[in-house]
Image (cartoon, helix red, strand yellow):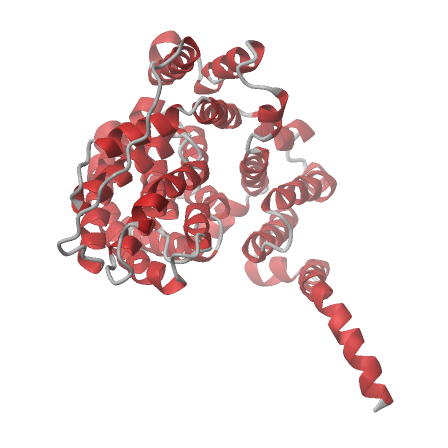
Length: 467
């Protein structure tokens, strides 16, 4: 008896540390595999490829398990690259510098996202996003199908320019009074609650700053010699966003029919736009025009992104606390993924993996395979982490690799069957008005439909735009 009493508290005390022990054991197993040259013996890897493989597997484990915050995993990646991979690369006479692993953290893509975050903070602080939402919802009338269409349009458009997480939080707050007026026996309330996170996920596809997988894909597309401008990405993605929103609208109305429900939208009194509001609109417009016209003025999208940052904080339209509240974790996670890609590329790992793909596998089957993998992975883990893992591999393939990378980026934003699949899903689920099963059925149906649409039309449409 005494032994049992002593053992149980010890087991309970060790329970919080069990995931870390498992992670330590996993990493130790990888180190042992490296020590006995398992990767070199059975997979034909060189020593640099072996080290890169171990760093990749470690990163994938941490991203999937979320044992530590995702941005911390990025720092672990950098530490392993600098202290382990870099010396191995130099020992094998591979030209590489420390700056090559550090520069992705302040690359053009990071600046682009930083500018997007600043615009998002401006729109939110001066409540221009809320004004836009209220204006459009005020035009929808009382018909449920019109109301949900208006909500989806606002959510998607805002998510193209703002954090889809912030957009979801704002839109959920706006529609809660509408949901409260719907009788408990009417299922349409679930349609309204699902329309916001799903539309926000889809809206992020529309611009390079909408969601990190877009930016990751653009970076690697540029690395293979194809330069897509801000406007060209929108031409690639916005038609799919419109198509996807139409499918989402129809599916929600079929699964959760409103019947003869009539809803009155509460009007919010708003004052006229003041000078400060017009200044914010002007900053937003000038920045967007700058992004759209990079081919004419010669400045990169990252350089253009410095404009809202300098003006907003230089004119004190945003304060120090706003700067501290920017989504730095997302920036560091994207940077970590990009620097991971550097290690995979310079070590020759991606080329070695490509060598395992059967020669007889045509590009169409390869496209389907990567789309399925991306959809499944993103359902259970971060879409940024999925893109960081898959896109560098796709970039090393022969043939139209750019089409493959755009497909992966889109699949990463259309897999949304679980509350953990995306932050917007988690916010909507956290309202307490939805259950996990409410997301699973429409989420799975949508992922399958969107996957088919991407595979059917993407490879035909994107080459017309130079992809």
